[in-house]
Every structure is written in C-alpha cells, then in structure tokens.
Length: 139
Image 1 (cartoon, rainbow, N blue to C red):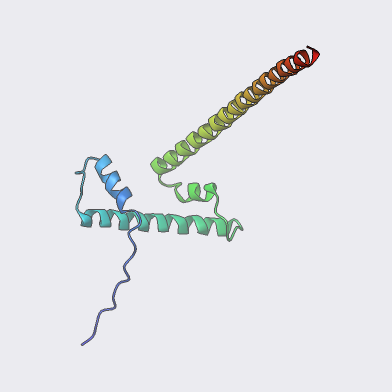
Image 2 (cartoon, rainbow, N blue to C red; image 1 turned 90 degrees about the vertical axis):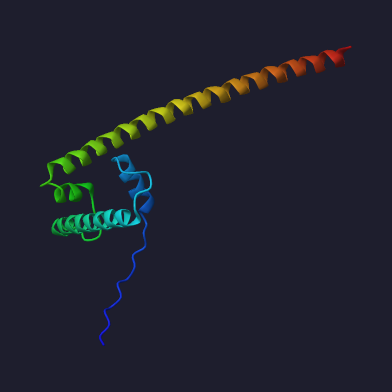
C-alpha cells in the first residue's frame, strides 16, 4: 500500500480578516469555515505570486534583497484597476502622513505655549512669595 504524502497544514493567519471581508461584501456574519479557508488560500497564492513577480523585476533592476513600491506597480501594470487602487492608497497614505506632521507640529507648538505659560505662572508665584517673605522680615 502506498501512502499519500501528508499536506503540511498552513497556519490560518487571516481567518478573522477573511470573515470580516466576506461580511463587508454581503455574506452572512458567520460564513462557513470552508469558505473562509478557500478565500484565504486564494489570497495567499495571489500575494505570493505578486511578490515573486515584484522580486523578479527588482532583481532585473539590480536590487536583489530590497523591494520597492515601483516593483509592485510593475507587477500590477497589466491590471489597471489594481494599479489604480495601489496609487490611490499611496496618495492617501501621503496625505495622512502630511496631516500627522502638521498635527504633531501644531501639538508641539501648543505644548511649548503651555510650558511657557506654566513657567510664567511659577515665576509670578515666586515673585509674590518673595515679596511676602520680604515684607514679613521687614516687620
């Protein structure tokens, strides 16, 4: 009797994400486990193939160990819909980073102003206490 080699079980890392994705696209809140696993398998194969194609392009460009966003764009060049979505997400990411920088700089200025106000209050308080102490010693 010959035995079939056992398939190595892949850990299910994205099950919760796949469940949420299915629900977001109109499936029931608790989809069948087989559906989740099938979607996860398809997604993993797609991402693996995409990474391999991007790595091939990066190697061709002379970068053996580092992928850049342009490598993924090249891998998606034939699928305009996915390429457009990647570019849209990159633009949104840039906008968010700029907004965070602006928010952080405004927050820093506000903190600096608050620190300055506290220092002034402490200085006024110290002057008042010094005057009181001077008056009480002068009596």
